[in-house]
Length: 187
Image 1 (cartoon, rainbow, N blue to C red):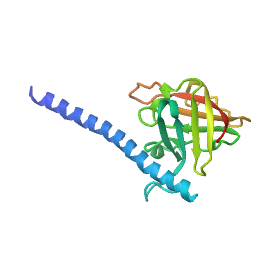
Image 2: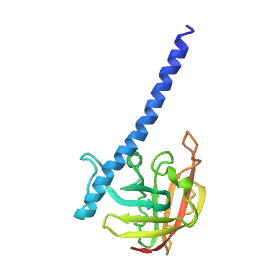
Image 3: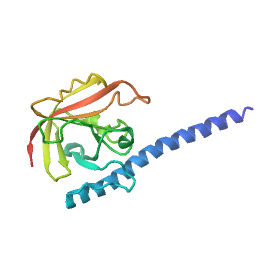
């Protein structure tokens, strides 16, 4: 009996570690496939699915050069889409359009870098049509998921990157960390 409990704990630990490693491996592989599909989208002008059974496709690339980070963004923000990359939140503006473009991703994979974004950082968003828009970070906030304060009718050209808060939590929670940015112009 004394040997069974440690063995069971070891097996449970291995299973949990394996599941965590699987999630991160899937996120990394997905970004490779998404990058390939986004490159094809830019070259052809037609939305390209990253794999044949995908129910979403790349719509943008987010880059922050100071942090040397880049992520391909998918159409939609369903749980299935967010498992593979950041998602463009439905019914929000596209980058470069009047209003607020909102992109969301998980804090432990694709948007883990948000904790390192500083006021003044420039964020480039390249859309599927090849146009790139530059934004400057002007603030951050922590809000409840159902009280973000984001005004979809904004007359400005704004960007919000959203992820769960706090960054080191291991369980889901109601709070979101938002990075707010204002458009500087198009390249």
